[in-house]
Image (cartoon, rainbow, N blue to C red; front, side):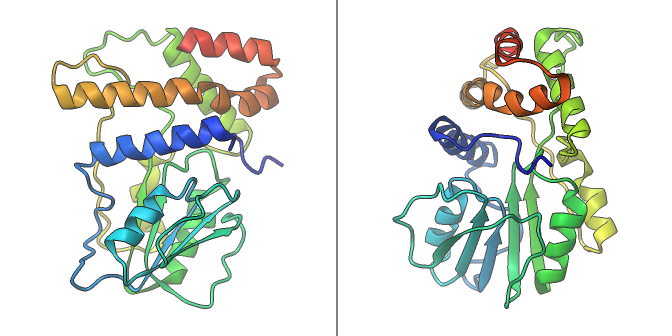
Length: 253
């Protein structure tokens, strides 16, 4: 069974840090959209699949009186962190066994990580939240879109995204998540479900300075991650060798 399809080496950790910076910039320097308040901060926060822990650390600085628990499959987080932040190695697809409930639970860019986000993550979050608590997911899809229709549907970049989507489905690690979240939340039982959709540019095509910088950052994020995204899924699904996968990556780039 495929537990996790992507790498966690030094290059991937660097990419994850860049990804976090780009997302915060896209969100207007916000870490969250739930109505959390510094005046009445959440007592307990859970960050699922924290990666390098950058989001959890920033939340620890923002809410120094909150207890923040962040989990991941790998202990790749820094040692020097705010005193209210604790990292634990955990497979969050397994049943969650906490002695406490949480006021706020968070996920970010976890597509391709779960067999079922609904059953393994959303349902467990629903069950583990305090009454009136919030669950927020900042997620995307393995879908590439173009506003002006100039990107060929059969071009190398589009083809790579189609193949990664198909591979994720076949390996029981679907990479379409963001567009399904609202329905998942509602099926699980959440109320007051709000959806916000952001467009992330994939390169520096825009004349607008902010969008141009975002595009540069996300292009670097994609290029740095293409190999890691591809190797496990493409080998398992299509039987491709490392050389074949690298050719596909270079064409997409």
